[in-house]
Image 1 (tube, one colour):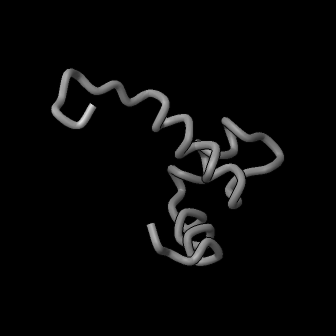
Image 2 (tube, rainbow, N blue to C red; image 1 turned 90 degrees about the horizontal axis):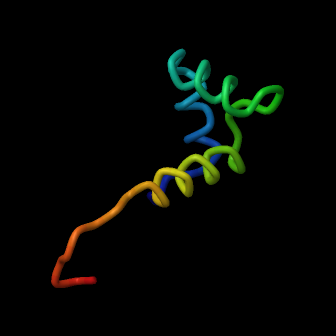
Length: 55
C-alpha cells in the first residue's frame, strides 16, 4: 500500500496476465495510476462482510 505508483505500474506491466486484463477492461489506456485505482475501487465495492463486531 505504500509502494511508489511508478514502480507499481512497471511491476504490473511486467506481468502478461495483468497487461491482458487491463487492456481488455481499459482499452487504449492499459495500466496506469488511474486504472489501478479504479480496479482497486471496483474490487473493494464487491467485498461484502457478514455480521462482524467491527461493523
